[in-house]
Image (cartoon, rainbow, N blue to C red; front, side, top):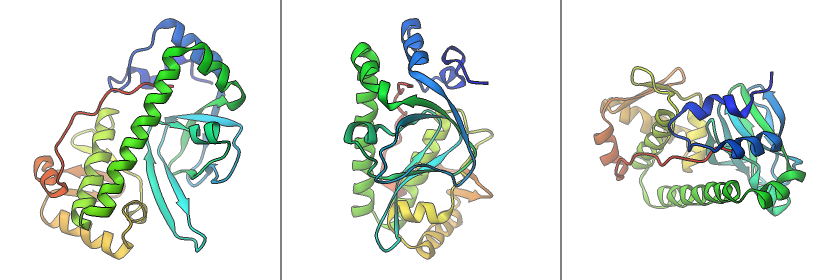
Length: 242
């Protein structure tokens, strides 16, 4: 059963902006179907000219780039509501790969319809531009983290940002949120070795700031963790949903 945009479970989350009935109708016409994928499935490949774009309806994934020697740089973590494939749509090919970390359900949009959708719906076109700008802002913050923060501050920053995204989506229950990634994924995102990542997480755990085990993240002292990360706690901004 394909989810009707009017009954999208993500729209019930306060994290996403409201949509007018005509916007919902246009988005429904733009949507061509849904795709279910299993963990580890490549969704988009670096260098590919993907015929489709996606919105993550359920599940989590990774965006990453691979060097010639096989090393990997995780660019971002995909959460429900994220729009996937815009880069290929605008630049004709993907500059990074996208892979499912968990079972995922994706809303599918045909790339060939994108221009007409963009042209005929000014509000939705602005929303897509806003999402691109937010992605650029996040990558800038990530670059500062990799270049200037020490490992313990970088790891604290990453956990705060991931926890905030999960909380905004209603994924935090009894202080815990699902975080089904590996330590290697965080290491690849922060540009440190797996051994260094393991020791850094152990240090944060020893100071009773957080616990991350069995795919569940608990933050015990957000304010103290923010001091380690050298950031201020801010409420996530509401996002448009495509």
